[in-house]
Length: 273
Image (cartoon, rainbow, N blue to C red; front, top):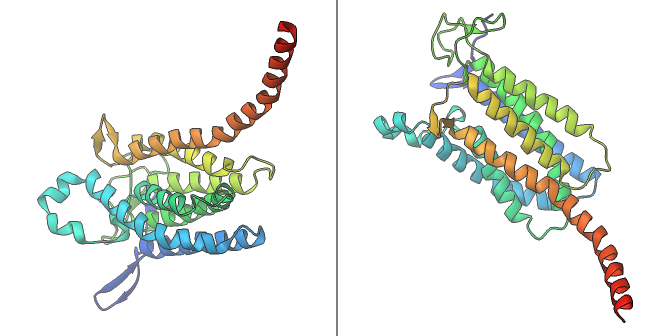
């Protein structure tokens, strides 16, 4: 499949607006707007979410940039001046996601509604990611390994960010976007009676596993133990999501067992007497 769309949306003098940057911003804005709307409908505190967002966004950008530089360290070792060029295609998605999430956790540490707030944000974040990844596809950024599959893509425009021309490659960005879109739909329609924190946990686990699998068709270099740096972060997010999601279940089980243990001890004491 040949992508013929021009990756540059608008040119104003030396400034060029590309699809990736435009849709990444639209996706972020959409995720924020939907989250604030849903939080307002559920009376979960938009003010606290805005506070976490004000700290989480810059932290996510910085961590995303740091992770990208570490992942491509051999390139930046030969061109150290490029380290300071902050643009959307120079950010690690997982680095930005986890960096922003860590700050949001810290800012909401004492908020008893933290789990429910993050549950509202999780599906909307998935939608924002889907929109941004489609921008990467239109731009040609993030193509995968060469492929002879019928849906393998190549780009007609010389301005596309593809690694080369005339070589059909996996549309890894589309795979990523479709996974994020499915997560958005599934998490948005999840039953309302789920334990608090379940949606965020499901997002981290499912998207983390998907990123581990997608690494097999992506061009990112191996960083450690044969894994790409984003795969390592996704693996960590998957483990955290499992612990985070199971914690309420374990606490509930302990609470149910506590009365039974108390009654058992009373029976034992009465028999001993």
